[in-house]
Image (cartoon, rainbow, N blue to C red; front, top):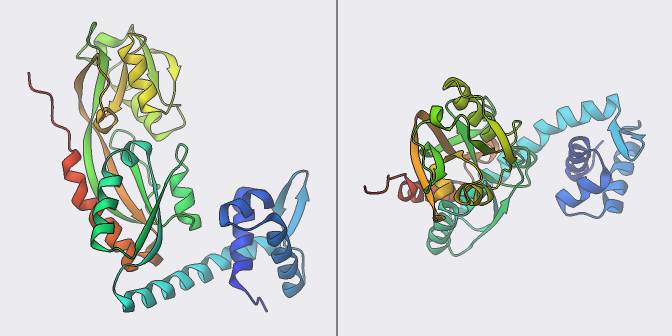
Length: 301
């Protein structure tokens, strides 16, 4: 009989991250503590749950079964914790928010200032993840609320198993140097471009927009850092397509034009099992309240 649910959580982390060291770092344990938990788990179930593969580890058949059924156990435990927290009513305690950099520089701080003023017992922590890692960390439970994106020109089903609340729908903008502006994608076909990597959601959206316009540009630069992108454009080294929020803090020397029929949506995402936890619902509500202030408004002519 498995005596401690933490062993199942550790096994799941090892399965997804590939090493005991990475799993330990994610859940705040030492590698030796995780190893001890998994050794005890193997004693309790009577069979090995991991096998060594060089520097990495892999699940045995028994380990895969435990992870599969353990997901149900961990979700049930989270629902129980949320139900107990709901009885208390007042949002309190630590809550971790994972956000895209553009959201972490804009609506997230505004929302968290508001929610902590309303609920002083709440202790939010913000984590800005590398490209497209936010959803993984939400599903693993290392964050409680994710602020992530989707593009209508490159739809995906990545949010289908999550509770989602729309925060903001913003246009994509063609960004060019003010000294040499362009207003249409077709007119930028021969320019050097800067974009996010093709494997990212933003990179796929940009390439889809360009393909629909019949543009096959040269990508001279590649970065997922929006500040680096606009700095390259302002220096006259490239043009780019970016969501409007990326230009919130402004870099001089830019010209923008709205790309027709192309938008990014920002979402607040939570695990279904945690949706009734007061801290979670409070953070999402304040994100919704903060978002309209960041809607795009074209500069006056």
